[in-house]
Length: 608
Ligand code: AMP
Image (cartoon, rainbow, N blue to C red; front, side, top):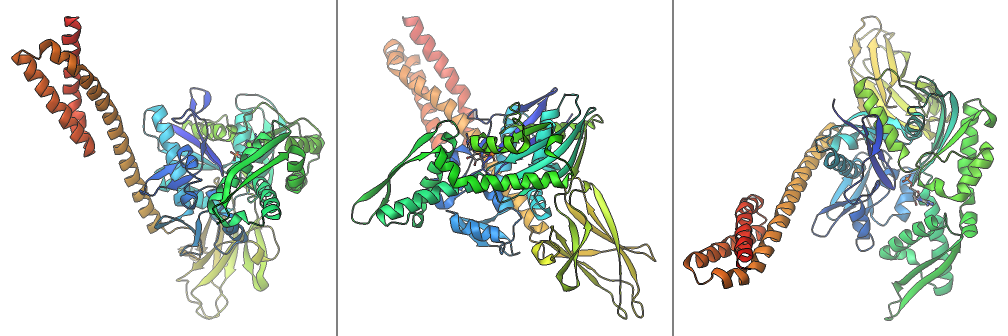
């Protein structure tokens, strides 16, 4: 059976899992960590770094280190979220060719799916190293509140990473799968998911026989741990400015150090009630004098700085219950997901709102990836005993006269779903009809997310129009939208051109896939070289350390001199092959080096 991995592609950290036998298992990375920072960097030498290694160099290479790319995925250049990211980011964000966002690293700009694909590729490698076999199929999670553009862009990221994304599932739904897996109960649960960049709340009914039915879902894709960090940064920056009259935001390196320190302080305050932020030499004043930042931050100050953010999540919970037409008393368990739910003030607020202690049985950082792995295995094994019924988080509709939004598929409709609508041509010989498809919850179409312009062309010519076209709007199980059209009289399918979407073109994706494949070959070659080099260097060191003894024991005999001379040649040749990064030659020398080492050790031990 082909293995499927489950990937939680997080704003801050990512996590990968697989089902081993019947046990959902998180796969550790090479450093032994179960989560990997979703951080990508390019070094001065043009080398790509992903994960912990990228995080470690973020301060000294702030301009070329991307974090929280998930906040930008599937967003349009002119959206308010991108404007806000522009203000606070230490890396370059530029406009792309399709009103999309590109990220500048060194001398190249990358699309956001490309950056995310680098994180996904790293997760794929982690899984392949662990399983000892290539992996292609994956289930990737997204925030439940992601719209079509964001889902499509995430799927593109998977494709670029060389993955066959067999399903996109919602993070809270994945968490509930892991929570209910193997248990046989009927329960209505709320999943409160606050991660590094996004907030989701889903209300689900879990029924015995493995039925997971989402009743409502809502959230905010621009509300998460990053906003809590930003409050601490604002507080540190403004108090520093008052004290020294210097604006730390003007210095990218200082800003990156502040960001790290703010996150660290926030996490520490989940365990202790006071912590110290200490950043020596944070900035130079230009008069050969450096300023230091030292401040103590208490848990209660942090809570007052972020109280409104927590309240926003509670208001959204209230909305989710209303949408589900349920009362807090109907909720039988509350599952906390995402690193931010370790903050005591959040646990307190959620507990007060739902009038019950949140469940402590799931691991907030791992549960989403575990659920994705469970779903992946169920899909390839075609397990009938697990049924997942999710909903669409936003209404789908079209723009009509006067910028009004005509809703076709309401929010919280179970997916997959479709609705048909009949359009009629009205003018003489009209051969084209244009439809503007949008997603969102406002009556005013302009306030909703524009998904694309669908143009039906080559329609039958008819005097005074009156050709009836049936247009079907579909949302599949990934939450991704498709539009199809057919001429009602002839039954013929009409071709539809999609324009003005902010996504990548097929051609662009093809080139990016090629780049990712090239990277993979390069990386595997580098790894092969490093492994051979390490083995060869150990042998060379050992042989060299044996030279004096071998010389002493057999150096006066012809065969001894001959063996030493040959050993010196092979050692020199190996060194040259290493210097030239010639993997095959290094590997070719290994056997002879091993033989030489064995012989030398034998000579020395016999003489003792
Ligand atoms: P996730 O996206 O689920 O990996 O969540 C990451 C977010 O959780 C980041 O903003 C982290 O700073 C935050 N986080 C992780 N651990 C803690 C903690 N102990 N207390 C508060 N926040 C935390």
